[in-house]
Amino acid sequence: MEQSKQPSKESVRQWLQNQIVARRPPPDPQQIRRELGWELIRMSRPATARER
Image (cartoon, helix red, strand yellow):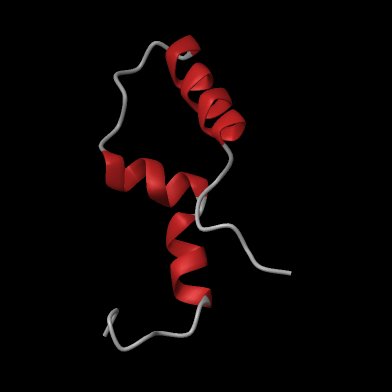
């Protein structure tokens, strides 16, 4: 089964809602990627010629 390249829209919305409830300013996009695990997905895939 192929892994998705990014989290679902629902999980991003839920995460953002949690940030809003916590009354903190939204973090930078790199922090969002780390918290949602996008970096882990990128690291787990074999590198292609374009990504090197």
